[in-house]
Image (cartoon, rainbow, N blue to C red):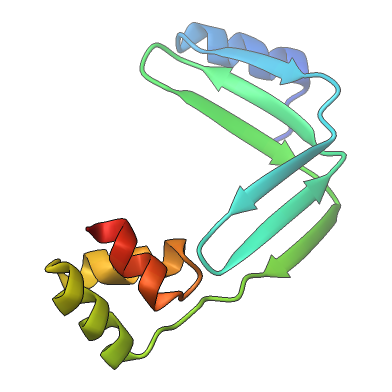
Length: 112
């Protein structure tokens, strides 16, 4: 079964469901950021579908680039040292280390 709808038919169908389809003009790139990588879509076609409850975006593009991020890891003893010296939880100590690029003294000072 070949089911194909043109843009006008799609708009009418969405309007009947209480939604509005709008193309966003002049979009140069879309960047989707995750903890592990960034996905960059250059010169995409972007449509926004608006409804009463939410906004949805449709992104279509051929030219994509992935950039892997370095995930810093800190030694357990560094986290423990900052945690004990600043009297905070290990989670807070790790966050401070991330914010200070692993500088132990700055992390402790930041938390005090």
